[in-house]
Amino acid sequence: MRILDTSAVSPSVGLPVKHGTVDFLQTSYKEVSNWVAQSYITSQLGSFSTASAYIIKGQQGTVIGMGSGPIYDFPEAIVYYNDELFSMPGIIVDSGASGGGYHTYAQIATSFDTSAITDPVTFTDYISRNIHQIRSMTITSATGSFDYRNAIVVPTTVDLISSATSSVYSEFSTVYSYITNLQYETSERLWVEVGTGGSSGTYSSGWAADGSVYGNLKYTQNLSATKTWITGAVKTTSTVGSATIFTLPAAYRPSIHLRFPVTLYNTSTTLTDFIHILTTGEVQYTGSIAGAGYKIYFNCHFLTQ
Image 1 (cartoon, one colour):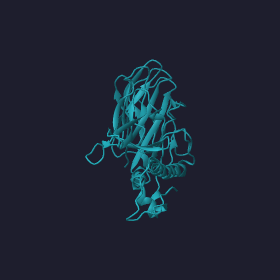
Image 2 (spheres, helix red, strand yellow):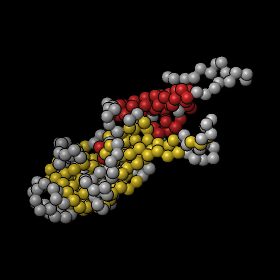
Image 3 (cartoon, one colour):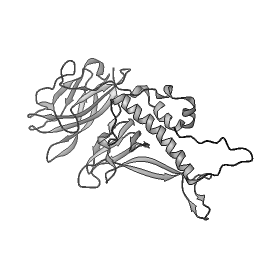
């Protein structure tokens, strides 16, 4: 761990601040934040890759409608990417607004703290400059660092603060607050993939796992069994009418009938339609699809019974 030796400082001996001293302190902060974030991710997923982006708090986004492309509602999140922790405010993005495909790219946004006691700062060359950077993450349909839909959601949370020393906590309280603010209610159990045997549920006639990069249809719930999440893709294998896709086990069912928007896609058409989730567990598509190869993309969550 990097620390400054200030033993020589006294009322009569001052410590001048050099450019390297400021860089030293920033490197020290990053070392600790990287250790905390990477250890946390590894403890929950079993591995860590520098090539991936991780959503430590939040979700990948939900389709809420159609514009030039599917319109995504991205909730507030904390993202770990390229050895940095970023906060991301909630944002709604039309993934087709830039043309040339449907994209939800993450970009690093930089602003400055321009309050009266921070920026600008007048340097010794008498030029005023902004130096107090605030780096955050935002989503756009234009080119960015990575497609946010491919970021890995860290599914559970642990209390890392209990293993940290009080001195490290006081010096890097901002970093650790990101971890401690992860709520117990967003701690998820393992995902259950539909059609994999046991109590996972089976696909009804005319439906099958999609097998694409968007993942097969799966569901989970938090540790207190009060919320259920459903995500992934399913496809038709034949013509289907208003029908049940699969049935949720009793513990995962809602207390009232629910209706959610979903993206329906084939090679020539993309549109928003709806699925119904009943209190008896049936997950139903209420429209009519003529033929095989149509895909429905799920991303929804709700309170259980």
